[in-house]
Image (cartoon, rainbow, N blue to C red; front, top):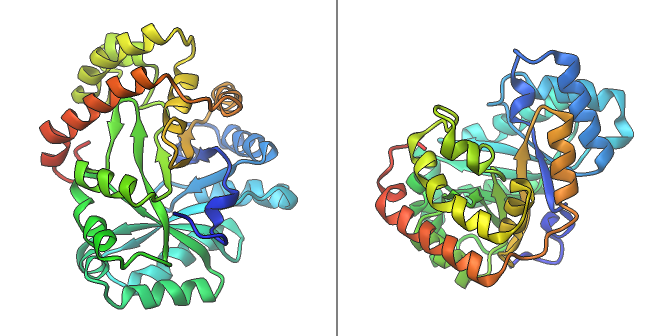
Length: 304
């Protein structure tokens, strides 16, 4: 459960994901305009050095309206403690900020092992907070990286350091393993749900050849589309936002777009986070538990 001083207590129910701001095929001024629109909406932003030149685009947008600079989540890591500080600095420098609200811990190699075993990384996490570079941390989980955070959570190492967990959580994806998911729920750990709409409208994922970037998403859309249809909700975006917020532990959902119209749809949807009917949620949760056992838990890194 988040502490009284956790940055998560002030988070907005929708977070603007900036992945598409790094797509150089999209005119730069269009990308800046979308960033400015999200800034005006007052929502948090999620960004990373991994997203092309998204940081530079954001830096330009922030310079244009310094009073509107949003609160931020950045990806940091990666394979050892020496990389942690550099990962923060390579994000905040182009953004023109001195620190961020949350660091998304992307754990691999020696760093993942150290984290799992309660090692010296926790001292470094505290130092970075004391210096004001970050106010808190959320731990990233994928099916292939769920074991280290599961081990650390069970041992109690994360207490007082980790504010919550962040992973893909939408009607077609729940990327915390079944075991990690159960531990998060039983310990009431706050969650940030990523990839709000699963990559696009469920009917396009199901019916349009090649629309789903991986075949498993098309197969899952076949199973989820009838549930969405029975809900009577017209908008897939609304359905997905409400799905995420149907879990009491979810504090926010992260959705990415480079189009003003899509951003406005996200912003409209965040005004209605009423939980979906329990029966609807149960249908999807049963599917997600099965998918985790059948595919997710056997997936190679980056394959999903």
